[in-house]
Amino acid sequence: MRIRKKFGVVELLGVASILAASLAMVRPAAAQTPAATAACGDWNIKFSVKEDPTHPAMPQTPAGKAMVVVAVDGNEATLATFTARIGVDGKWVAATRARQYISFAVDPGAHHLCASLQGAALMNTENPDTLHSLKAEPGKTYYFRLRVYRSGDHTVNTSLDAIDEDEGQLIVESTFRSSFKIK
Image (cartoon, rainbow, N blue to C red; front, side):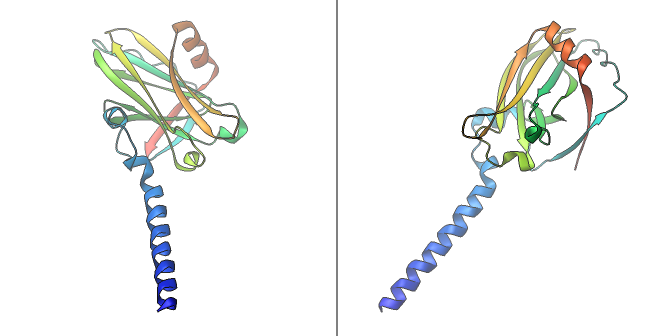
């Protein structure tokens, strides 16, 4: 009887470990807040990204739309390999990497933006997702900086901040445009 109890405990611990590991793997999808769900896209979609070495000019803003530019700050060598998905109103619209930028058009009105790290970048990440709201006006360009940084305990954090046009244009001129596709 005592041996069975020991095995029963071991079996239960084994089941608990498997359950905990399974839950950890689905954490990015299951732990999202309603705000992240409304802003980001399908958590199973992954992107591959490379820089466009031709350094093309910023696309013109389509008539009746607004342009959004997201530039990524992440100068530490250890952070240079992450991929960030960019979502608007619950759909992924772009992806980019460190020291790159991406731009896309949006309709006028209120929007919910999301930047979310994918893949290996999620290891030791405190906040892989970051959100920002936007009230877009036609013909305007809105610049955002995605920061990926380490805190004192080596945990990776993210933030998405609106920046002014001068700073945004400087970043665009000194970085490469991202080229992305769904894996």
